[in-house]
Image (tube, rainbow over all chains, first blue to last red):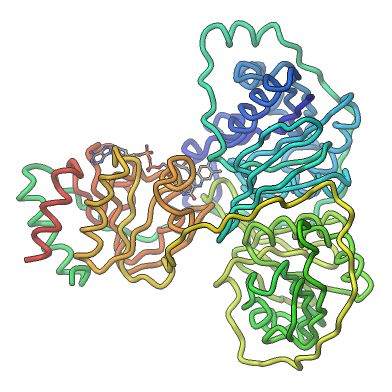
Amino acid sequence: MKVVACLKAAPEAEDIGTRPDRTLDLDKAAWKIGTYDLNTIEAARVLADETGGVAVGLSVGGPALASSKLRKDALSRGLDEFVVVSDEALADLDTFQTACVLRDALAGIDGVDLVLVGAGSSDVYAQQVGNELGALLGVATLNGVNKVTPAGDHLVVERPLEDAVQVIEVGLPAVLSLTSGINTPRIPGMRDVLAAGKRPTTEVSGLSAPAPSTDRTSLLAVEQVERAHRVVDGDTADVVAQLVDYLNSVGGAR
Amino acid sequence: MSLGNAWVVLPNPAAAAGLARGARGLADEVNAVVVGADAALPGADLTVAVPAPPVGALAEGYAASIAELLQARGAQIVLLGADVSSRLLAGLVAARLGTSALTVQGVAVEGDGLVVSRTAYAGLATTTERPAGSPAVLVVAPGVLPAQEEAGAGRVEHVDMAPAPEPLRVVEVRPKAGEPVNLAAATRVVGVGRGFADEADLRLARELAAALGAELACSRPLAEGLGWLPTERYVGVSGATIRPDLYLAVGVSGQVQHMVGVNQAKVIVAINKDKNAPVFGQADLGVVGDLYDVLPALTNALAR
Ligand SMILES: Cc1cc2nc3c(=O)[nH]c(=O)nc-3n(C[C@H](O)[C@H](O)[C@H](O)COP(=O)(O)OP(=O)(O)OC[C@H]3O[C@@H](n4cnc5c(N)ncnc54)[C@H](O)[C@@H]3O)c2cc1C
């Protein structure tokens, strides 16, 4: 089975600064493949191994995708090859734009059986790219998939809803959005890192996105509530006494 | 100010049933498409009732027909809930209408159009955006739109639709054992994180919560991944947003993705054994200590 894992690079949230005027400072933030995209790579690798197939990474985005460190990182986590669509004009796309470019990029990859998408990107977490991509491709589409088992010419998947778990047979091709609990991504070892350097990355150019679905009028850091920032440390009986006093003073204790 | 119409779309009658009452604040006319409806949706003027999907099929299979109906009727705003099925239906319908399904934290009508707010950068920031085309397709979690009183005209129209012949078949539905969770209503919340080494140790947090009259919440890894607590209990950018009087974080590091779900709490107290944990930077009172020592002593002291 040929499995494509869709990946998105995003700036590391811990390293994003906020200025007094509530604008963001992204200068120190390194761009990384999304945390939950690592589950997608892992799922693609496992399915490819179970079916004697291949796992292909596919990413659409801005200049951050040019980084060879980022590419090697993705490859070292279990991809056989990586297809990258990187263009200044493709930075900061919304979900429908992303889905359109992914559809066009997928048209250039032969014999795709299954497209996997993560639980949500590390920056926007809209949880919609897979759903919209599936509709554009006109193939079987599911979100919230927590387990995928190959069964001959189809898959059997588990999809937890709020009050029940659905077990669904899915014909191929299909687009599945996964949960972040579906697996534990492997941590690449020295051998994986070395092997990653030899695996191919294909650049795709000339793809463009439709107009955005919204006009953004502002982007501001969330306003912080003032906090007292008192810290107590030391002997347990002592800190607990202070904690109880504090809870009483704010009406938190019963 | 309001727009001409809003359409609420529900994959089953129980999904986000309060949406129609909320939609009234945005549009003069509130309509609904409800899969499997046998009655008018409370708050809607018109309920288009679509038959429940045949056994083995998903309501999401109606997406193409629903998109066509919305277009034919000139929908201006399309609203869906934030549950798993509604989210899928939202994306499937939106893509067929040539637009993004937008998960919104806020929505209002300004001038002749909609203004929505959304989170960005893992919850660090908020955007305001104006949907460019019509209709706008919005995913709306409970509590985002204040419910309006108006009952709606309550007309029902039955429309026959067949789900698309999809290569999908539901072969089993297993009920999920669950306890009702109402974090939003809780005035005190004890939030637990990966500082707990073992599921059984959550007993310490449950006992503390009982002594405080608090609800139990958690960080995402405890729900997704470890599976120690139901997903309804995790707070943060991808989970619940709460505003309790007291949030007591125990063994939680305080990553931005978690804290945006609780940063409007009146008082934040944190217990963590690492004095450099980011959670202390966002707490009113921080206790540097091992939860395995502090929690039993605290529960004891509160019980006295
Ligand atoms: C797209 C995206 C969305 C996300 N959404 C959410 C979300 O909505 N909600 C959420 O919570 N997370 C979310 N996360 C995950 C988030 O980034 C963090 O990984 C997570 O919140 C960390 O959980 P934690 O604090 O329990 O664990 P850790 O970060 O591992 O922290 C555990 C803490 O426990 C302390 N500790 C350990 N032992 C003890 C002890 N004996 N006594 C006292 N303290 C102890 C440690 O010092 C540490 O600070 C998201 C991540 C991504 C990428």
